[in-house]
Image 1 (cartoon, rainbow, N blue to C red):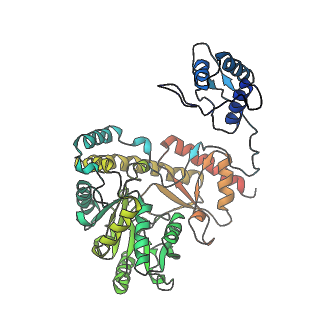
Image 2 (cartoon, rainbow, N blue to C red):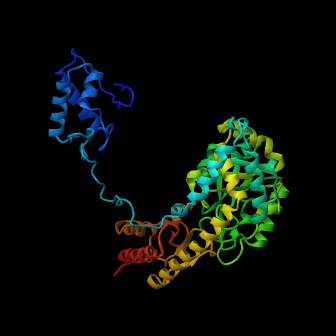
Image 3 (cartoon, one colour):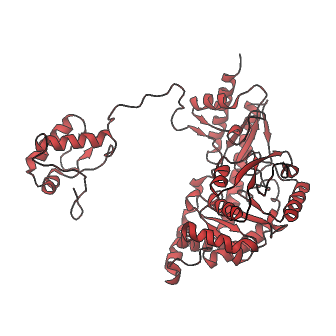
Length: 467
């Protein structure tokens, strides 16, 4: 059934040659749609007059059906108000598993997410409004798959200024986030004959899937207190490598100077490429972040950045700075992937950069995140003095090493029962080796909630230990 004008639409039909009265047919279809979730609690439905007109039946038939459904608790009817699906519950609830975690966490320490409540809405709205007003007719078309020239110029300037990246417009590609960029590079490497790509161990669980989908075999190379073990790349048979040198994800260590030199030498000697994931280098709290690896070997490093950590994941804006030899091939892959990233948003971000809005936002957030990190570490010291915080003063999470004998997964479940959500190092490792370690994101909660959350986490950890 389709409505007219501003009337509501509802997929419902009746016929005299079907089983049951017309009123019973209406009731039966409503019940089925409500039980299977097609019609959700609170959803408005057509008035009796509108539905009768659309079905071609008398209004009394619909009135009788609605009255019966309301008596059974399926519809909420109120004089002068739009009929709605009642608030339920309906149907047989799925039996809860004995080991199922509780619902949404009261204290959310899950890592890798910024404080999106601090998104600069006013500044972004102004930039987006200006982008819509200024974008040319030509730029409303598909355009260059590499992206809007204004943003590519702006990023080349910004990355050179704050990260030491060597780039010009022709080498900057705008992507739909980091993972798309990684996938494009992996595909090009596979087409060039690469067979294996080295990933840091530990690292994101998504990267092996991206590499495999592109036709590369992911191999894991260990990370220690100095960063990636460059000497293990040849033993792993790697043809390329993905690395997070400024702030290793998730251990938090920095790639040591001698390792950076060794990695650049390895890339040049083998004529191959590294993908540098510079995911949160803007957030260093004790000193300026080390410059990007790309600045040392621009012909062999694909630099990858994203707005997801500095602004919000919802923007879906990322970027690559591509070595000259790969530009044409990556342009072809991007063209085939989606013909380019949303162009109005690109122009808005170009304004955001040019006006200094990103610099101002980052200055505010560095102070805020540093305060939250300090509070988290102080609370850990007070509540879990036996734990050790690893990694540098940077990023959006702390890595917390626990004593031998603790079990990450047991602690995670115990914490969840207390309303505390935490990350564990086991979800980032390719093997089970390594001390029990929790990963605690601190960006999304207030300082008072961080303290209370650490207290609850400490209780959960103590609950898992022999008494």
